[in-house]
Length: 96
Image (cartoon, rainbow, N blue to C red):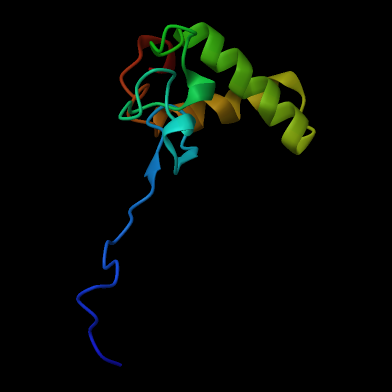
């Protein structure tokens, strides 16, 4: 194998959302209007701000119920545990 200086040698590191962990490979995956945002389009409000904790928690719990067929209590417990591991939420008072 030889080195080709004309070839694209860029190492691409895929970012992940600091709120939910979703991969953000393209500008459209990021919050609207900010291709460098730390959170994804699903975790952002229409203006690009991070959604309120209550809204994000509810959406993540609903997803957990659909994905794993869990009842509400189990989905909420798993969502809390997961959100405690995410940089955007780990210090949120509702999770302590």
